[in-house]
Length: 82
Ligand SMILES: [Zn+2]
Image 1 (cartoon, rainbow, N blue to C red):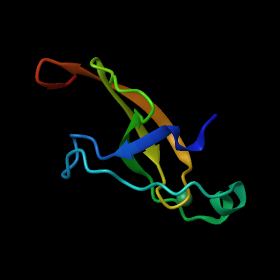
Image 2: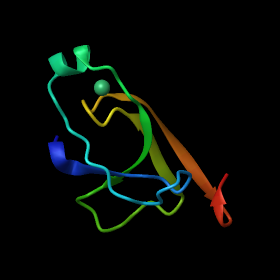
Image 3: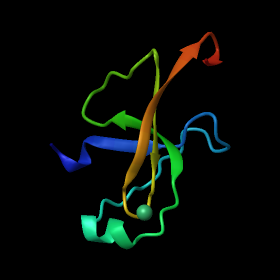
Image 4: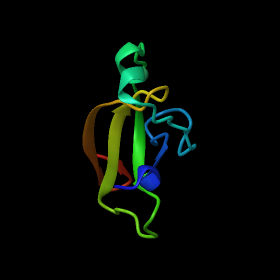
């Protein structure tokens, strides 16, 4: 799988809407010794021009080491999230 397939940006729920966030993908050894600082980010596919209109894929990720805690899917309903 391509490493740079996914990009990350702040979701609309947070204060800075849709600003891009650089996530560093270090090796597994750096992830062991990192003091994780998980934040919620919106993951999108860089390779496609189409986006999911049903909702956003939200991941809880540490931007320093790139370790993912969990992933969820938030569905839109009307003007915002469900
Ligand atoms: Zn970390």
